[in-house]
Amino acid sequence: MATAVGQTYVCKICGNKVKVLEAGGGSLVCCGVSMKLVEGNQ
Image (cartoon, rainbow, N blue to C red; front, side, top):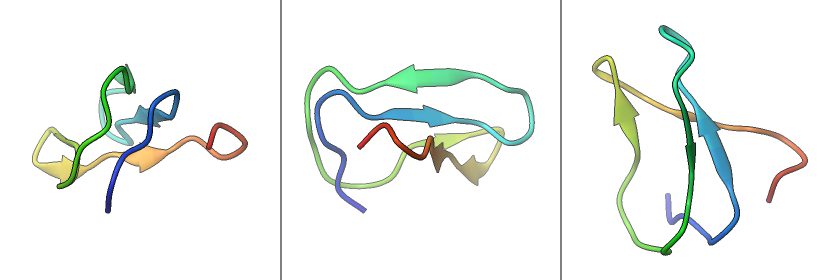
């Protein structure tokens, strides 16, 4: 999964949110699981 500037991701376990400031490859991980893209924020 590649990230894009402006996307917001949330951790399903602890609720941490991340807003992408610089695009890159790979995946965002928190609490040992991949973070979920917040819909409508692509």
